[in-house]
Image (cartoon, rainbow, N blue to C red; front, side, top):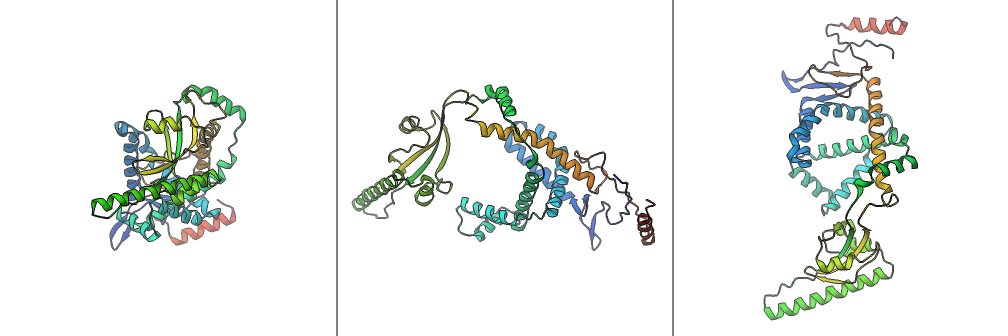
Length: 365
């Protein structure tokens, strides 16, 4: 790589001053972008919270292992965002979709309510959106520039399965989705009238549940009806309740559902909440699954196994093409020995800069 000499009065890692007061201390410059001490500290605080949630008993050990990579990750992000700009990746469309999905998951009626929810957590909504946009852009750059070049072979999949199949042994389990029809509670204060109202509401809920089951049997999509008609908390996810092992469901429900195959639907079942229709979306038998059954998981694991070193190599290449300046005492664990190191000349005069440009033009340097 051709050695370049830069005059970096404006590029040095000096504090930012406003009316004589330090506003932000800059610890690293990545081309024209800065990483501040406050960003660095926020990332460290976030890491501490993450490891506590992940494994509270070993949080200190995990933090100590990962803290050294905090600055590396911040530099990585700046390099990927710059590449995203070069590739004209904005992430705006995906941001709108993800925000709207988040709104639906939180059962909020408008984006204004989502903004209020974010603000109530002490988060600037603009910062919240920018963080999401940055994540979208970096993911797209990684997929386009690195992930698209990762290839997997059947031989590699078979080898991975053979080496790890004993670790994949699992108990019998099923995945369930539900449609819940709950009777409307009576507001009548008279006991006799309330009893009559409750009986009528229960009968109406049963009739509705039976009608929904009839629609499913006739070919209606379970997930669509769940989103539209279910009164359970899982409605927005198409009724998805997740996975259950034996012994985790009420015996009546376990006996019914564990005897079913994937794709089968129960009759209407009376529960404390009302009437429910259950669909078995997957049924995993006990033991070691066949390679065919877990091929997607194997491919994901292999992909990530290959992606990580390929991504690190790509980020090293981006570092070598960039100008990165670190404040003394701050270490980028992803730094390359081949990075172009800017030469800071604080005493340089404007005339020196012109002479330097002239020499470069003439090919002297």
